[in-house]
Amino acid sequence: MLSDADYFMVETGDSILDLQAIFGNANPVYIEIGSGKGEFISTYPRFHPEWNFLGFEVRGKRIRNCLKKLSPAVNSNVRLVERAVNASISQYIAPESIAGAFIQHPDPWPKKKHHRRRLIQQDLLNSLAGILVPDATIQVSTDHQEYANWIVEEFLTSPHFISIYEEVMQEEPNLDNHVVTWFEREQARMGYPPNYMLFRKI
View 1 (cartoon, one colour):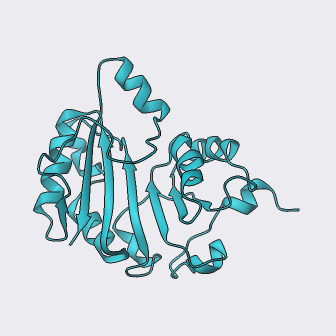
View 2 (tube, rainbow, N blue to C red; view 1 turned 135 degrees about the vertical axis):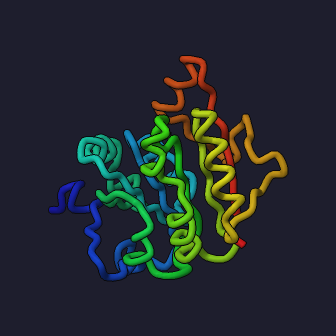
View 3 (cartoon, rainbow, N blue to C red; view 1 turned 60 degrees about the horizontal axis):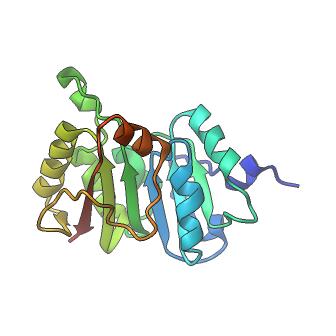
């Protein structure tokens, strides 16, 4: 009998992942970059059993937290990858094979000398544009205002994306069945409400 880790964990290398074999079907695949404590990846997919979800998280402790919230009987359309996402994602995800992406509260790396470590950079956006299907959306949220401004500039500078909304930063979630993560709740409680952004691949 498979353990939950054996069921949910996906190993990646330099070869392209066979998403249809991983999920056992040809349903659209969405990715979450940074699954954190697992609130989103364990909850949102239940509202969309017709979709598959691949969650990426680099920290082993957070992967274990995610696994505690997942059950093969309830979350059969979820898989996890223990790997940092960067521009190399296009080396193991096939072109135009991903239906959409969720990036919630990425590390803002607030010190200027650390800005190069920020997730949202042009090289990543170029790679994401390559793996996303046409008209796919990327939902991004952050409670860090300066990073929100950075994210908007990076996306609007990219030739691959436009904002769904004329007012790029939204105060209300732009998803159906919004899942409030632990981090979002704690930051809002301390007076740092999130900004929500939704971009479309063009």
